[in-house]
Length: 292
Ligand code: C2E
Ligand code: MG
Ligand code: MG
Ligand code: MG
Image 1: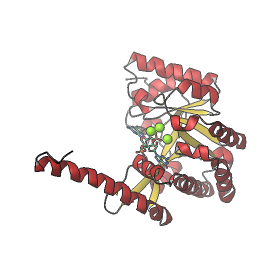
Image 2 (image 1 turned 120 degrees about the vertical axis):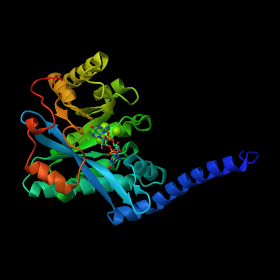
Image 3 (image 1 turned 90 degrees about the horizontal axis):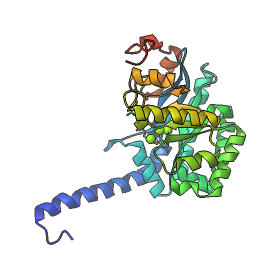
Image 4 (image 1 turned 60 degrees about the vertical axis):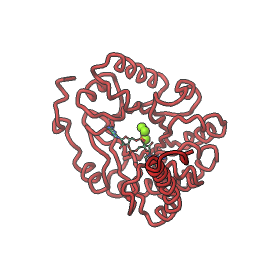
């Protein structure tokens, strides 16, 4: 189709498509090796509980510093893995890596700290997840209550009874299940009704419009009430401003995550933060005075 066009257009169009294809293929080929050589790693972002400020959990966020491409976005890594039959291997790598790090933190005296691990959805259908999780917990000696799996709402996943069974089995084991990015997926309400999840993370797009946007305030307030009626704990993600935190606090939100409180960071920084948790008063702006 580009044949009849001017050469300039052709040259501009063709290479970028090629580059993208080459990049995807190269990442796919190298991903397995990168896992084996531990070139993949995590940044961890604290999830806080308020009054006094305490780190309840850290979310493991995948990072890949590629020798040529630099940082590869985690969603691209996940997409590459899914397209090349590596989703299961990646999930297992992530699970094992995050649990090992948590075990180290527990040994360093931060007992009770939890880790949240993002699991790409379509693994549920394959039914191996519950076994892999129980093996990983056994190998690392981590209490099942210290592991939370974060899943996003993805239609490809939820139709199968096997997914629900897998989640139910994990819940029976005591593993936490969080519905991530809540409010942005498909048919959230039917998932809330059917899926055995005990945590809900409100997507950052809702949080960003707090506290000024009345509709956003009312929606977040309603989501929190709904979750509490269903015995679920609520995390707000993407908290970037003190006024958002104050508003969420007044709405009864349970847990808080976002750049305002702490950015994702490497293990050394996280250890320092666990050792010396910030006081609310030390954060950039005053909270106690309420939203401003
Ligand atoms: P997510 O699970 O919803 O993770 C939260 C994302 O929001 C992270 O982006 C985090 O760095 C970012 N974030 C945290 N606080 C703030 C804030 O205050 N403002 C804004 N604007 N952003 C904030 P990141 O690390 O780029 O990860 C993007 C997504 O990639 C994650 O979204 C998750 O869906 C996926 N992901 C990350 N690691 C893994 C993994 O190990 N496995 C799988 N399957 N997916 C992963
Ligand atoms: Mg997440
Ligand atoms: Mg999220
Ligand atoms: Mg997300």
